[in-house]
Amino acid sequence: MAILKARNEIPGVQLRFVCIICATLLSCSAAGQRKDFRIRTITAGIQLESLEDTVTVTNAIAFLESAKKEFTSRGYEVQTLRISTQHIFEFLGTTSHRGAIPYLKKIDQIATRNGIVVSVGAILPPNKYNAEIASWAASVIEETDNISFSILISSQQNGIHAASIKAAAEITKAIAERSARGEGNFRFTASANCPAGIPFFPAAFHYGVKSFAIGLESPNLLKTVFSHSDMSNARENLTMAMENALTPVEQIAQTISATWGWQYDGIDTSPAPGLDASIGEAIESLTRQPFGSPSTLSACALITGVLKNLKVKTCGYSGLMLPIIEDKTLARRAGENQFTLQELLLYSAVSGTGLDVVPLPGDTSLDLLERIYYDVASLSIKYNNKAISARLFLLPGKKAGDVVSFDNPYLTEATVMQAE
Image: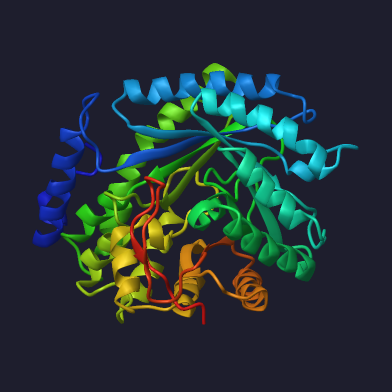
């Protein structure tokens, strides 16, 4: 195996770690064997000819089902299949936003029947405001089950989009007020400098030829590595483990690309967490401290430094995700007041994908929402136009300190955080 080296080239502690990684990889080599990570999503990117173009959607579904079959036959668990389109404002044509809802419902029905989720990109052009868009967005959430969308609040070309930020705040508020427990905001985000080809939702959108990308759920892999590492060797150990885990994934994706003629865009190496795969727990395995304590920032920077420099083709965020109500450890530490909203933004400066599913009081004002979005947009511009986003969960009738639970099976019980 390539990662084995001559014994006299490796110090004792590192040699023991290499042996652990080798044993893990060997034990997972057979099809059907448990692996320390999952494929969170295979996301197909398509260009729709019009709102009526369901043929392109159904062709993408056929491709995704075949791609999933290829991965599962090799022993990988594939959690979701997704489709992203170009920004919806680009294929509305002469149809109004309101007139587009029946077409979106038809796409949603096809997607739902096939266990697919769909992102239709940004609903307004950059830095454009529409007084009716918040009500429209809430209606889409009410009338569909699997349609996600976004607003573009900053871009490399034009900086911060003030009009878009105003729209994003109003959309967040409207969706919270018109969806049970505010859960509709799970399908909306404010995107700052996010490129095409992100496989994760709701920021995903597509440009160009038909293509696909892979997204991961890999916190348990990080936890395994960090349980045998410290800050002096964690970078090298994590790099070795992830490259050995992801190279076979890339090889399968390249085979799929050659067979089906779909362009392979790469792997978004972001370790998206799940309820049994906590990135907070993984970070604590490295720092040996509660998430939010001193050393958390260093751990976040270390992880993202690895994720962005792996010897596989990467795409999307390829950064650290810290979604509070999707991660039991992060939710618990937030309830213990181990970190604040502003500290989450600080961690994003060196690592992450922004503010993700952050539980906030239902009466958070539009003014405060806009100020939060301005901070996110400013961060994206300041730090080399990095791709980040903000998915804020306003919880109607709840105030800071209240404990909330959700019907969504992917969300954990959490404590509402202070918005400022």
